[in-house]
Amino acid sequence: MTDDQMTQLLTGYGLDWQPFPDEESERAAWDRHREAVIALARTEGQCIPAAWWAFDATEMLRQLSGPEPPESEQGPCCLAGTPGTPSRWKSREDYDAAIFETEAEYLERLKIDPQTLRVIK
Image (cartoon, rainbow, N blue to C red):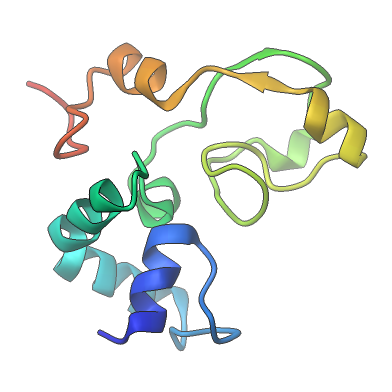
């Protein structure tokens, strides 16, 4: 895996426009390198890598207050803004005003181990 591909899995943004040829290739890289990406995220001070939001999350962070995003943007994604939140908003002001639960609260609520990012059984 290239550094650019690792950056894409960590942050959702590669240094190159599209470090993976398609979503299937990106998902396969996440499946193969999941533990390494999570470990690197920890050393970078990041809790949840963007690829986890894109491929493993079953729902987004709960919005606690502020304007609602457009209905078409309710799925878990990390294409823009904060991972785990909707990718498009009516305005920058709406995005800035939205308050979400923390990643730690999200993981606790869904009973996900913060170290492995897998559901605790």
